[in-house]
Image (cartoon, rainbow, N blue to C red):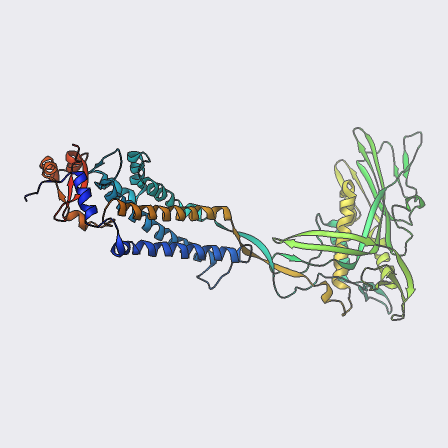
Length: 556
């Protein structure tokens, strides 16, 4: 093919300008309609994203159906945003290659044939973008596109940080039943001869369990979700305490000693007899000196007992003396359950009571006069007396040990002796067990049952927007728009057609004979073209006949 003489760079510029092609006109603008559409898609996606995050920030995560969730919609919008943004960047970088080789480009660095490959790779991958940045040293507009192309690759990671989800409790619509509670307790049943009464079996079991058990938890109401709260609720219950007392020691000449508590309870320790320990528990009428610590003479008290032990240790004889008491009280509970684990307990309890003859009953009752909810809490006198008789029989026994062998009058006595080192914990377990039984077997009025109903909560996912992360995609979008505007302007200024990434124009561009002569068999060898002419500096000019030609720069 014969080539006409190649015009110089200045004459080509004058020809193109004189032909009136400096004004891009409507046809030029229409070449960028696809990119403008992508800009509209980016703006729509960004607007939808910000609107969704603003509306649902801090609120319950919406779930439109089992397959479409809020997170799914966010991912879909971000995917559309990312694809549209990448389309803009890829187009601009591809168009940058034509601008780079244009004869009208102003710059100190000449284009090379191998730069077409560099621009193509930069439009589609991180490595190509890095190569472009190294080649251009930041001196070409395409470097902006390369930077954006690299940053867009991190969209998947950074976009996931924009929206997080916190698990928070959300109340369900229906209330849950209140915790068991009692306003009146009267768990006694007929037994034996006519008129004889005894404690109900559940109360006996609760006392036995409280004495023996290693752990005891307060009775709780149902919590179907594992997260529940209830209002403060009062109930009849049992409280108690153990107080350590001084004792009197009397020994004779044979070193036989008697240890006596103020109430009269005593242990005789015979000298010379092999004995590891002696232990006794017995009902007591109380001691005036312990009045401030134990309410032994209060009408609510149903059990007072002494516990005393004498142990022989290598260091000497150890004596422990305690007086314990149990009494009815009015307890105020606060309980909540979180992740299936209850927490809370007794806020306060009241033992100030009055004896009164209630017009609704035929016997004396123990009535708690100072109450929080204006409700009477009562225990009939016969229930107190029967419980007192049972406890007096139970809290009577002894134990001893010799040569490592222990002997007890009952398993209850053995359990009490084993708990002697932590009587506070033991009395707490006993009172908790008895209170649980009273709450289960007692009765309440019907007027205020719903007053103590609870609220169940479910763990629901709430949207939490990290607005600082939103700056990342919006900044890239603004940079991409500016990059597109610059590319459109440079395309018009440098008199380049908007061929962008289209491969067809390359087929119809001519190459100067001097460059073709350098190729020889480079087409048949891997990387042959790049080795032979890749580093050849070129420029793209339009000839008088309208054909486009790659030639070496005019100053060569």
